[in-house]
Image (cartoon, rainbow, N blue to C red; front, side):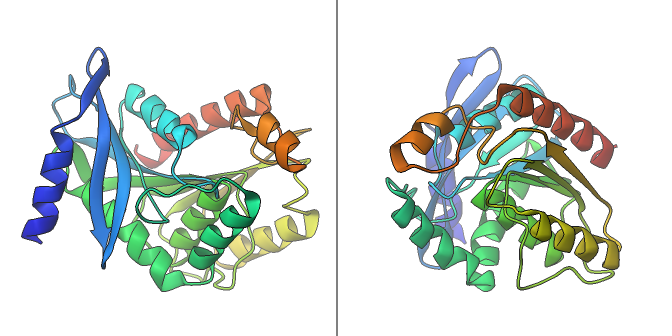
Length: 262
């Protein structure tokens, strides 16, 4: 434990101020023998502890899209940690590689939990964070991760999924899910067909989960990522940025956060 604390402290030494009060920088932590490379952002001008939010990346890995979300959350008054689920901060350059990285986590719930919980513990340990007020949000693969964490009973106030997959081998059970759930989906996303949505809603209803499902008309997969168009063209995938859905889903998240942290 002592070695882990020293590693984090050294990482904090290179935090930079990006604008008035906002500090950000990389942090290293561990899950078992794996080094994870996250990114912490908070407003140093706020002195009292505040809610903490974990941000889980797309299947491409921990990238600038994830960090930008963490920055926006810090500007909104939260402490945000963009986590690393793959280890060593590795990123995929091709869908085949992304599928391999994400598949290794999706098929191993205990591995998923250990890496998620390592980030959650790091966030809890920050003096700037109210450790009783935590939320996790995720994009695509990350959306699937935070939903699985809610299903497994992680001690979170809420989870929010942006264009994430909804299918699971570990459905929610009555009384186990503590977190409120928000799902924001692209209506034109072929990766999340209508049958998957129906099954998810039945699962949430049967488990008596407090959830909200929002479908954005015309929005395709990865609708929050400004780089989605280029990736979709490059790899012939149905990915597309949608400025309206991006803005509306972010506003939906802000309302959700106010409700769960009330």
